[in-house]
Length: 162
Image (cartoon, rainbow, N blue to C red):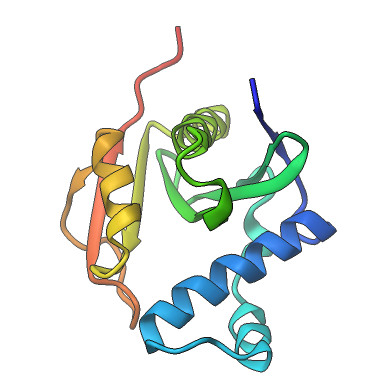
């Protein structure tokens, strides 16, 4: 297999670089222009990633043939629900099956934290992400939170592992 995934602190060099790339892409798409380094720094300041560690969450880093290529997190919202967040595959690594493996790993991480349901919010313009979520069984749900960059909400019951 070419992909490997492992839990990682959000402040490691690989996790930090992936988080920066994630923010640069989603911000640039939103603003319809490249995000500056200062804007990326500002966007990552106080973004709550410190909660993506047990017992409140988990952050995964994926490597393709040993190169950091993907990341994603889960955050426990309450005793039963985990929120999927910061799901990202670097463009050069898309189309290699990593997104599905990342989603499976994140769902497993949520189950290990006690979640029975996964929820997420995203923007309408992030079509690839929305397609991925629907392909993995997520369906639109009523808004469970609000914010300036949220257009659509999804949820999915997490089946127990066998």
